[in-house]
Amino acid sequence: MARTSVGVLRGGTSSEYNLSLKTGAAMLAAFPEDQFDTRDIFVDKRGYWHLRGIPVDAARALSQVDVVLNALHGGVGEDGTVQRILARAGVPYAGSGPLPSASSLNKIRARKILEDAGILMPRGLSFSLPNGANTAEMAYAVFAEFAPPYVVKPPSEGSSTGIRVVATLIELPDALGDVLDAYGAALVEEYLRGEEATVGVIENFRDQELYALPPAHVLLPEGSAFMHPLHHEEGSLRHVVPSNFSHSEKQALADLARAAHRALQLGHFSQADIILTRGRPYLLEMNSTPGLYQGSAFPHMLESVGSSIKDFLHHAIHLAHR
Image (cartoon, rainbow, N blue to C red; front, side):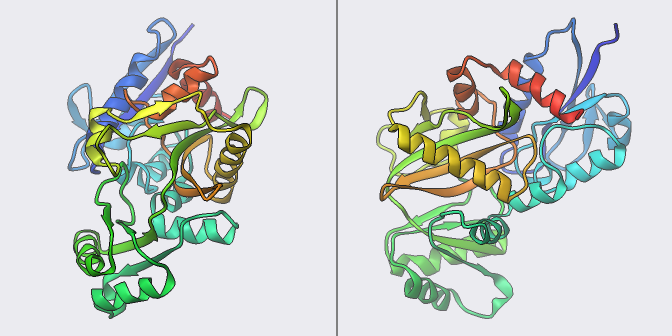
């Protein structure tokens, strides 16, 4: 019997390049050789595709696989670019389609969709370079809506990249200027204090149309006040699952993750980052491509229900062929 040929896309052009390599490695290690023929499709930092270490065009790389698993975090892997390439090639792939992927990656666009759907989120305002206001005017516009402290985010970065946390209004113009200069747009949100959690969602899993994995309680390394990109790179975040959240809190976290998945019309799976504060869960952001690297939350959530990365990926391939 012919083995299924699985192409694993990893690397990419985004700031999450190293994490993508690790997620891809976890995917490649999950497939037994007697059942699957895995192809490591590497995308370098310039966006060039490679197969078996040789540069190839995307069409040629994809012509040799039956299904694709996308481990490209951020950038072209989640902004709809790769999804459009896969669709044009006619290759089944696991994960969200081009438009939902792009919408979830762009925090400003996602926020509008989620707010329209009634999803509870921290208050926020967004700005772009062409809007004519200077950063001081932007800062006072934010202050008129909600008080500090503030979180200033780039529009389309993940793993805490580019985020600035400022305690006072005085610091806000400089933080806005830094993010606007680097990324062309900025989202300012109120900084909510509380317990951080993350919830994985999988479609048609265990006889449920939209299965929510048990929430993981996210704990920062000792001495850290804020999440930093190095925490993801080093795998130093702790993901406690089963968590000590109450039954009602777990239910509220799961309901919020499912509602956000539906609102953004995400496909096959997703991961919601949430903060539990004031007795209520507030959505921070959605991820259409959950990390599977060592130190990420998704594997822990799978293990907590007796599943594994291997089981999840086999299910993802099944979803891709539906």
